[in-house]
Amino acid sequence: MTLDQEKSNILMTVIEALSSSDRDHMKPLLETVLNAIMKLERDQALQATPYERSDERLGYANGFKDKNLNSRMGKLELKIPQTRGMAFYPNCLEKGLRSERALKLAVAEMYLKGVSTRRVEKITEKLCGLEISSTQVSRMTQELDEEFEKFRNRSLGRFKYVILDATYLKVRHNGTVRNQAVLIAYGVNTCGRREVLGVSISLSEAEVHWRTFLESMVKRGLSGVKLITSDDHMGLKAALQSVLPSVPWQRCQFHMSQNAQHYAPKKHMREEIAFAMRNIFNSPSVETAEAMVKHTVEQFEKSAPEFVKWLEGNISEGLTCLSFPQKHRKKIRTSNGMERVNREVKRRTRVAVLFPNDASALRLVTAVLVEIHEEWITGRQYLDMEELSSFTTAQSKRLAI
Image (cartoon, rainbow, N blue to C red; front, side, top):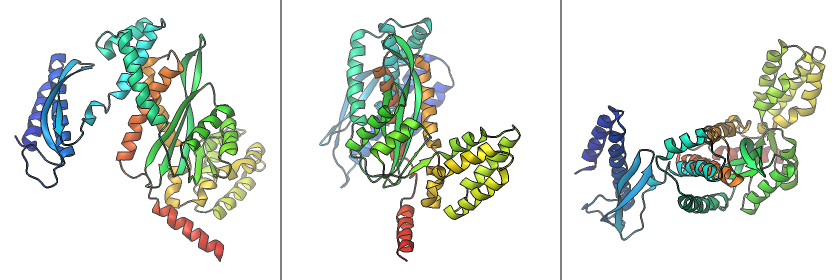
């Protein structure tokens, strides 16, 4: 059977199964789709289909191995393609399942540690589709922790831009429930692709926690950073000054514009101040931005003196990105990219409600970030880094003159 015929058969199975909401129809659908995808993965890895004569062939198909996989739809009976002459294991079995395994474990830990509720029991039944023993929890914990520890401690390298932010999750800590800070960093590498650089669970965003987090990334080889973007948090700013004092810092323009509106003496002036801030931030050059700041000061000097005082003392922190290529500025002038990551983390962890400990929270957050990381490094290029090289060269020539 050809690949096109196989794809056609898969499609027909999908159409038939989706026409019914019967769970019994979905189980064979998943088995068929996963088995077919694994066969296609093997063909791709071998660079040849079974019985195909090809000089590009890297190995040979060697039958199948039966494997049972527990899922939300019940136990799936799969056939894992085997190879001879090269190592192979299908990626589709892991992609998308890591976070489910981590979430399943988080819920199971709640149950086993005596902090379960009716809601948690319903979630366990709905999510897992089977009972979870303490032995299974222990084995899953070890497998996931080893995998995620490697990801969090992997060697880094040169990253031109780094974006930092934090979100909060409810975690049981020393007998009480606390909002624990989840510190996250991602960067843009020399090829213009984003990568998740690190994640940590801390008691707060105090300077000591951010400093430890930044130091750990530096020890792992983080270097070549041209710009760091983050919100204006005192603990983070102090940590950056301690660990990466020579790297320019860009204060998130989105949060900065929101902060500016708090200095509006009257409600109707908020939009005027927001408009003035947008004009400053959208300036094509530092010189133009400084002229816009001067104009804004004159405009609001009498009507909003507190805003003017704040603007003169803070605006320079939001204009650092103007020293970088114009095509890069939209992506590096705010931490909005990280806000989207945080929203995804919150969405995927919401079902857990309350984590029994730091390790459980870190495990699930890492699972979500691994998926995001894999999408980034295999997806479209985020920034054209040739722009940065050309811009830096042009700047050097101007300085020489």
